[in-house]
Image (cartoon, rainbow, N blue to C red; front, side, top):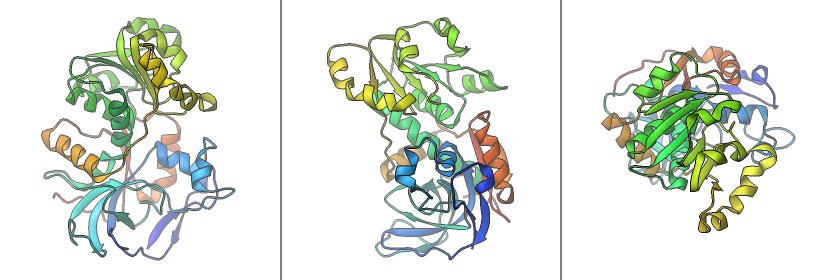
Length: 333
């Protein structure tokens, strides 16, 4: 089968195409013929090996896993021993991490992971970006324990995590202020349609324009520090970031979080994502209700994967970038 391979860390130019053996379903696994995938922040970090901590998981000095790609939507072609919830011909979507990825014609995935049947009425390309950004967004929501009536500021609200987070928070009854350093068209209208009560474009010097007293401030793109967010929080409010922060400072600050929280002080929490079937089922329910729909910025052909990576590297995408495989029927489920 054809797969996108990178044998060293670097920019989009390190990604090439090769023929590799087809995967085989092991115990508790299925093999999916990929019809659509995405290029996202996780993929770019694994490709580049940045931040450097990624190389602890991905391999040093060269990557251990050479086929990239974390998100996919496709059709089941093989089921392994012990699998009862999926059958050949089922349309599925999901997220695979830490193993041979989805930038290939086929991928083997564990059924206990972030995997689900595609909701009725969704096509494969629409569902493909449904998991990666949302599972990081859900981790931010879960760790803060915000709910109905709370006020949350989402900084970096136009990315894959940010657009998912706005929707997941609104579904919980949270009042959302969506903030971006740079608000690309049609960012403001889009974020309002996603449910944001307020949309603000600011630079770092102008954060006072968003007011204060927030129950949580979430740096969805990882570009807002705790020091900058702290004045925006109410006493006892939480700061969460999708990134580690400079020098891994968010991990250090989060270690002191329980003490600060117990004292009623503003504090840092670190969102450890959960990638299991129960979260996948939750996201599916939201998709069926119309409460969550991943935002798609651009669609590329698989042969233009380097171009897709280069576009994501610009940091200008709104929502997600989808990549369709050759002869993708984009069939309705």
